[in-house]
Length: 290
Image 1: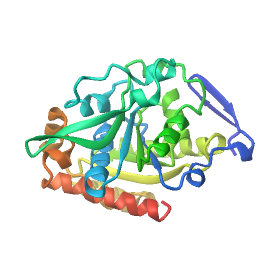
Image 2: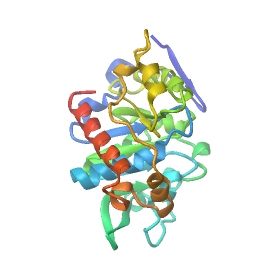
Image 3: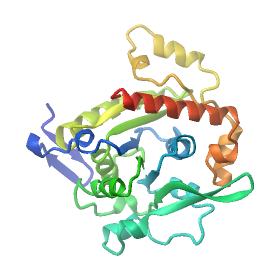
């Protein structure tokens, strides 16, 4: 049993069992998911945006994206067609200058030549995210509670690679961890062991209900090396990987450039169908209890 959880700017001892946050028991409808890998450059934001859009467009879900990364890639990606641009960020909520109602931004995009309001919402990030004075691990629970009250189906926390205070708070408020990795970069797989360790620490201190959904692969065009790695004797990673993989495609970077999720940019493209299939597989995993 891990006795203490020490992260930048925080040190938490284990709380009494009755006080630990058991997210999956307290919220039956809303699903909160942290997109997280302790290795950078694996497509976390691209995955967050496109899975969210698949849920919204293909499954009629209401989705909230929380940008926890100081690079603010999700914020930049999602606000392309939103006018006027929002001035408020999570920093304003923390400082008491704005409430969550003022902060949530409904995302617009173009589809078949027309501007469309989606059922995707964003809590904009800030470049000061790593330096924010997060009061305690309860911070993002207020976000999931608000999302539940507002009838959201999913909340996604787009987390940075490093274990910042907002990342720990996001994991504390999440039901699941979903990990993207690059099929061509085995180093991004090595980070999965760190994630398991991090999740165990969070479970021991602040979120008993946190579960690992699994790992899926981006840029998976030639996966012969990956398949050998996953089926190698003594390697158990194949048990926790998603079957569906996301191929390399120019449409992904093009969609980012134009600020549109793939299901609204090129809905019939093979890579878009990959994300749609991945999302269906994710839903099935959640229904089975991960």
